[in-house]
Length: 133
Image (cartoon, rainbow, N blue to C red; front, side):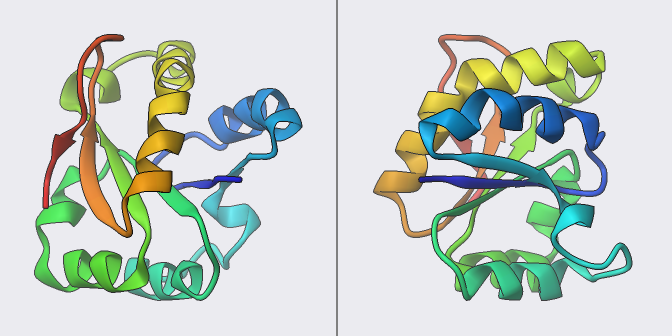
């Protein structure tokens, strides 16, 4: 089972819609605000997720991957983080949801294989994840 948390910069409608599709497969997709207080700091929610298992975070905030404190918190937590590529980040909500859904199985495979990591979520269906770590 993979748990996918969508950061505050992602529209909550995306994880709520995706959850309906992936929950029967044993996964869950939830917006950050449904798990933690709205004002929680990134470092704190990564630490919280790290106490559980099999978490993935999806975010638009690629700059987060470059900030040393956040980056270190992500690596320590054991959470896999995917950042929408700039092209995907500019898509409409439905296109973003479709892109994430298309990559869902690959995201789950990455989670099963890796202890942690930061990746760029590509637009193309056949594209590979690019490591930001």
